[in-house]
Image 1 (cartoon, rainbow, N blue to C red):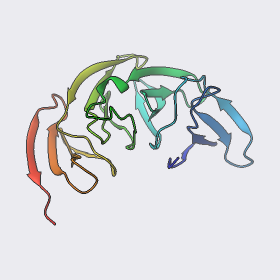
Image 2 (cartoon, rainbow, N blue to C red):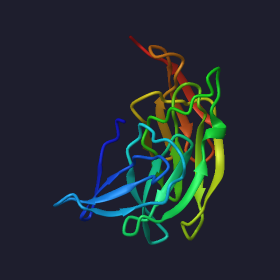
Image 3 (cartoon, helix red, strand yellow):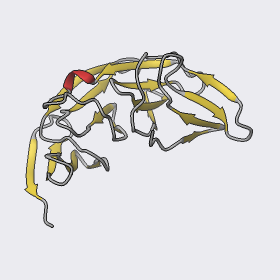
Length: 184
């Protein structure tokens, strides 16, 4: 586990995964359990949770081994989940999720290495459902995450643990803007 904890109001948020829960919240002052979410019956990932707001609702967004999901920060209720395991590719079909999701304007972008295709999901107007928007095999960031500047996503792709290229994708369509060699 390499998750960074998230502080939300009076809570410390952690994503242990497993059969009993997916995410838990502890009181930041004394460590008592405030809530535990229902279990998505999935293994944890290496990602860190993030807080986002859409449709007037705050949500904690994270990834487990197989799902992108959102949790209501006050109650621990699962708001939505989206199966990202179907986008695993390559020889291993690895679902080793490593990067914190990226949220902007009602959309959630997710990428992970080992030939796992990146995916964009769009939230419903109410923020209670996530729908497929686009997928690309041009960006599969192994570690380190991505950045959004304007309407573009920047990050590397993964060819091996030491090889890859710099990539820029259009935020709304996933269209490749450029792919450039790393300079060593």
